[in-house]
Image (cartoon, one colour):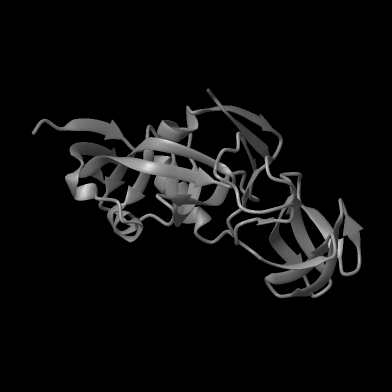
Length: 228
């Protein structure tokens, strides 16, 4: 079988390893009401909250902003109150919706906040299973390790064999279609991905996914608007 050759940017592996020690930021889709996530805390009195994709706000216990009241902080966990409901947030967890039921994935906008090193990471799902992503505009495809593909139930061994140029030379990978990639309330179908042997702390969110969106960056905020 003929092999195709693709380059995985050498910097991508370095960036991914650096991000292993960061708390992942969260993606916010804006079609189903307010969404809140916790990205950090400062002692037992303040929490850093992201509300509907705005830059993180430092809330003190008892304070309210944009309809979200901070009730308590305990390490990497906080309790907030919205519209009379108490919700528990955890650092690195998916954003919590406070405006209604679940979404069918028909959202059109994703808003990401960058980490302290300027990179964008987020929680999401592949084929309905939880995943951690790192946005990489230098990668041609969504990229993941064989171990991650196994965890997600991706039949990577059935994919097309391809040659991958890495910092350590050429390795054999597999090109496979993903049934769906979801971030927040936005779900995209039939996304091409490449599976490689080496372990990776994040799934690289490359251009086979990103080209489905119009991207706009303003300071520390990256906005992805779905193309149709």
